[in-house]
Image (cartoon, rainbow, N blue to C red; front, side, top):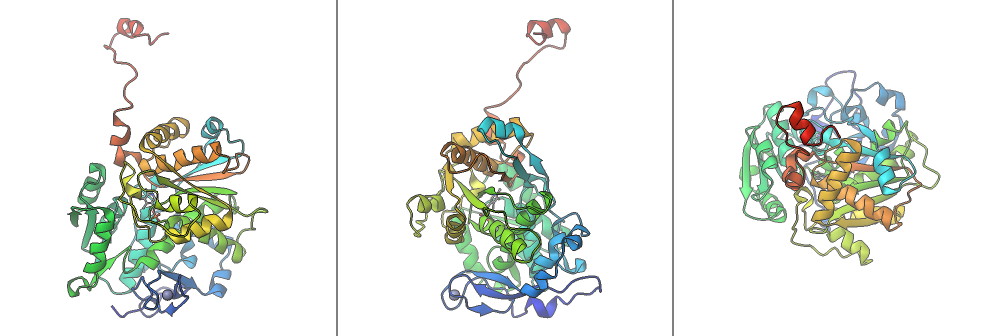
Length: 432
Ligand SMILES: *Cc1c(COP(=O)(O)O)cnc(C)c1O
Ligand SMILES: [Zn+2]
């Protein structure tokens, strides 16, 4: 693939803004590349990130955004693809509920406003629809004709659904031991689904090899060769929270980490909003907190050990969507958490199950295991004093409980079982 986004994505309608993306820049050494399908630096192998024309971003106003569609594309002028609606490969995700959580706050001893950003409300029920919409829109602009990914579950759902909507063939790769709820909700969309006998990290390595072959030359792997564009989709989870709070950045955010990319991009989004003048920086800045499971905690462990050396692990445990043992953005997540004065925690499987139930009982939000991880870590961060209970906090639920229903299946059920008569109801104690 030699196409660049600039050449192939000329807007076709007069209504749309130009693409504000300017280049791919190496996060390691700063080397610059055109907007092509490439994710690692030829000089230092560091990951590439989209850089923008700052003047173009600065022209964006709150009114422009507020007049936009009720989905992530209201932020198109801040993204590297999709300015022209006709070019979008999308299920129109985004603008998911920001749920006030006073009962959860009370249980945890938090006195300031606490919010749950509930991204299970997206079309395939996880935040991955955001990153996939941006990645595949860029991919189509770059000339790719097949869509693929290496997935811990939710990404496979989303790529398969986006491909189905667009009428483009797809091939998604997952570890064979995923939850049934993630396998079925991917397979139903009809693309190729390849189960690999190995971990996510094995799947990812294989996809890195496949993408180099002639047979896959036409194929965009959303989190491999078009990863820089994919990563930018996560910024919308920062923009949206700020807009939903009335153009304000919360003092603290708690974010689940797999590769660590989402965390770094929420932080990037907040920084951009301040830089381009759409929000004022909070007086004391914002603090970013990261959440992992005890079965896969390489980033949190590096923070706790006060090192930049992230030692890959072999993941275990029920939070499979977060089970990346060798996290690509781990270093950058560490940097964001240290710079902002946040912290990271991890929670074991029992704590995760407890937290899923706590969140459901106090907010009406049924989270998948990743949401359980995040709420369990929120609880620990309050208990240890790392998170200020008097500062406004947003906790991110990134996925849907129905996809990982086994996590709590043996812990909950009917409170009573009663024959259908008033007498039986009385005998069972239903009338007190
Ligand atoms: C993929 C995923 C994440 C984390 O994504 P990264 O950007 O890789 O850290 C969090 N929650 C859920 C439910 C996910 O599927
Ligand atoms: Zn480099």
